[in-house]
Image (cartoon, rainbow, N blue to C red; front, side):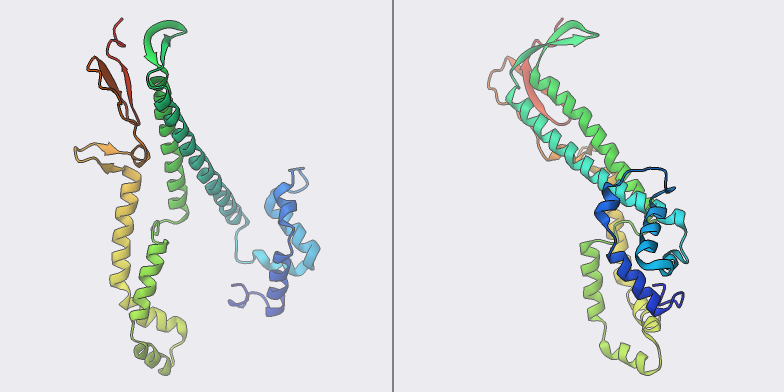
Length: 267
């Protein structure tokens, strides 16, 4: 990009690209902060200068170091949030499995370290799973928020479906129209901005509407038909009461249905 905009010479751009590929990423990933460099940016800049000389210093032209730093932090944060969310969902699956196995295992419930009403292990673990689902929702909200702040106005537009839709629409444009614009002397950018882009408005509007609906459902949840929110995390797995004893009841929670004695709530 720097070479295309005329900010650096073609030879310098080639050197910078080569040195970037020669960076020892493992060394940077496994390194520890020693105070020698203010932050990661200066350490990378030092490594590049060591490999390619002063020419590599042109890499940050037309860019703010702080902006690049924030971009790096967001990339790392997004990866860590995805790992946390995946781990939380897997743990919730294990907890629900355990709750199902011990749906009828009696135990003593405690209140302020004092013995209280009887309950079951399944009931207790289901409550733990419910609390975990709250944390997963918060992590997911943090992931959505940092992505929206990084990409305002285009959240959800860059997706496999969006790329497929726009590609199919672009291929449907008559090539004769684009060739005529080139014959008239328009460069590729003018062909795109003056000819192709106006014709793409219906496809862009369709994609924007579909992306808005998807983002709305992801942020606010969907309805269960009775005006209540339904969390997709809960819908992945539900426990069921497996008892024909009319004297036994079912304790229904958000994420589970655990059979418990009908007199469990009596004091």
